[in-house]
Length: 106
Image (cartoon, rainbow, N blue to C red; front, side):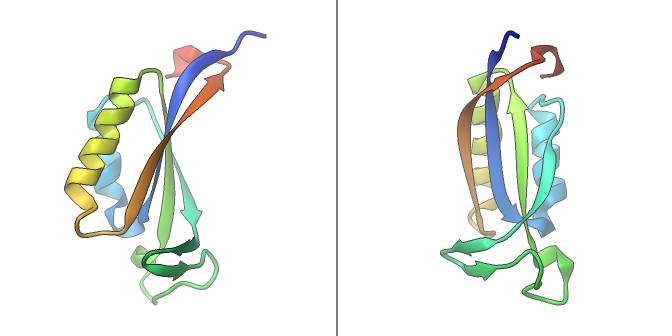
């Protein structure tokens, strides 16, 4: 088995901005992403995946994971999401070095 180096961008933010974040991801050239319900504790209090903080589902948190094959694309996604959304919405983003099996997918 041969593994290949790639980058995983992780964005944890509010579900209400998911469509806009995903548009940035697409516009930067990523081939896809995964969205997962997210909960936890941070500077803006505690969020649960089972007990919604509000009746409105859009106020839930999500985690978006994007695998890309170059650092420039990863950083572009992170910068654009931060610049457009993180002044007005809660969110964090981080980058992980990962190894993947099928680099042609990314």
